[in-house]
Amino acid sequence: MKLLHELIHPELTSREGRILRRHAARGIVLREDRILLLFTERYNDFSLPGGGIDEGEDIAVALVRELEEETGARDVQVKEHFGFIEEYRPHWKPDYDLMHMTSHFFVCDVAADLVDSRMESYEIANGMRPMWISVNEAVSHNRQVMTRQEKSMGQSIQRETFMLEKIARELVEQFDPVA
Image: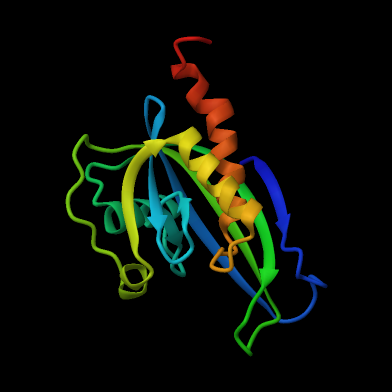
C-alpha cells in the first residue's frame, strides 16, 4: 500500500485531542478519458464515489457496496489498490476535536450501463448524482471552486482534486492519442 498524500486542513491547529477515526474506500472507474464521479450540488464539486467502511467490513466489499449504492454500478470488479491519503481536519460535533480519515483508492471496472442509484437521504438532499465526465473538466471545475473560495465549498474538495489530478497524470494520459 502506497501513501499518496497527507492533507492537514488549514483550520486545524493540532492533531491532538479526541479523534474520530474513519476509513473509506473510493473507486476510480475510467472509460478512456472519462471518469465516473459524483457531482454534489450543495458543494458544487466532483468527487470519486465511495465511502465509509463499516466496523469489521472487508474493504473491497465496502467499495462494491458504495459504488452500487451511489452510482448504480453493476458487476463491480476491484482491480488494484492505487494508494491512500491520510487526512486530518476539524470535526464540528462536540464529542471530537478532529477527524483522521484514511481514504483508500482502488482502480475498478463496472458494467457498461448503470442502473438507478440507491443513495442515502442526506446524499439526495445534497443533490448528489453520478455522471461520466472528462477527468480534466472535473479538475478544472473543482480548481475554479477552490480559487473562488465558494462559501458552499466542502472540506473534501482538496483531497478529491489532488486525486483527480493524479489520475489525469498517471492513468488517463495512456488514453491520450497525442501523447
